[in-house]
Image 1 (cartoon, helix red, strand yellow):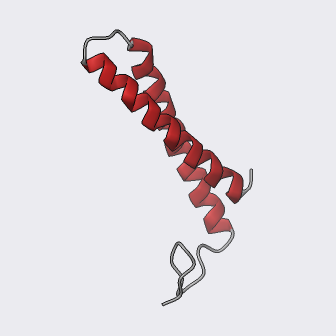
Image 2 (cartoon, helix red, strand yellow; image 1 turned 180 degrees about the vertical axis):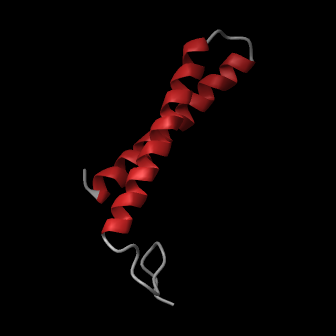
Length: 75
């Protein structure tokens, strides 16, 4: 699994978590969505796993270039 794929998957999962949080708001309003809470927990765990994989891949590739920040700006 390459670094770009892991980054893409992290972004996808974050969008999905946002959707699940909306479902949890419905649950708080009294609408039964117990399955949504379990799904959210699994998705958050998946994001944590992917972030770990991303960090491992980044370390293998030597990390971010020195003097640069996300977005490509050099200081």
